Length: 556
Image (tube, rainbow, N blue to C red; front, top):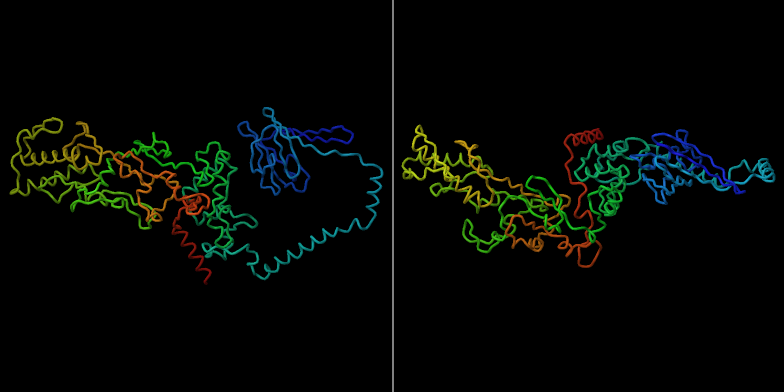
């Protein structure tokens, strides 16, 4: 990288002095110390204050944790892209930027200077002879006295072993157990708490991991855990419930990173339409807006008709009944989420997998297409071969045709009763997969004849892949809405006849009760009400043991 550093000094007589230095280094350091390439003598400049670097043909300036900071066009930055015409301030020193190809020119303009006159020289020499010039000013003496008193204020408790005077405030209840072990968090003296100390006990969740991956691509976005979770404030600060930290990034995602796929959100009032995670037939998950009706299709290969299930007087196992939503959609024990629907828990009581009136208490297994035929064969074998007195009448010759007209190959070595068991089992299998049982809810496919076997099933079921969570980026508390009818939010459920219908409520429905800013008669909703940055994860056992040993050591 090539950098031309130019100093321009305008004298009182109108002339201009110009001094330039050129550097050809991977990066150029600016600061007050000797390790810097460009040395500035201003007291407000840190020893290593900032650096200039070039990445993929683009010039950047980065702040190196200086005290007075770096400003580009009046805005303080940690890292910024440079362009011709930009004005950079390092402390009170101003640089003008000019970029020509691979050359970065930094021009520093210095105020006009005059030539010292003989009268000024005489006055300076006279002041040097006066004793008052060697006595510090009253302001300096006052400041020194204050520093001595302040040092004593901190030194006295330190010498007496009373460290509470050094604490910035009350520690939170969650960290009370390690209150006496400052080094557990403050690993290095006079250094801010780093993420590695937090992760010694806490486990990073998916949302936080996603932020970490995003920040790793954009180094200027790096944030410490302690930037949001501020300790020594009691219970105020450790668990952030204010939306402002969220909006500080999510309100300007495109400004932070051009490749951001997350939409800008400032408040719930301006929140974009909800997006759901739809899964296509190949299993790929896509984020789809509820407004995108062309793509908003549930690709689950399952036959589910809400209109039929919610019809009054539906035939049930104990007579006519009228189902409600909660008959299938049941709350979890904590009443926050819905438990996944399963055949055994929610469907079997109405949808039987029986196959023969002679075997009223026998059903084929669910979710095991390969096990259907073996179950059928075993049950018919018990019926025909074992219970001989209940043996059915001989099967006519026409019954020997297999599905799709394929003739059963001659099996002279088989006992006629065994062959009858096979025919009964195959016919029942065909009925279940193509007309009743499995067919009512699932899409099936008949295997090619080349894959047929004597013991195996001849049909396959498309795996349902029913999505349990449609909005993984948000948390909705169903228990908090338990007094509200399901259909007030899922308003099209009673009319839906196709599994492809996505029956989730849009943001318009939520805004009938929720608002971003406080308003009478509405629920004020901020970011943390629907989005959780961290989920409650249990502390691993090995870390619990370490804390327990620490507590035990304190009691000795």
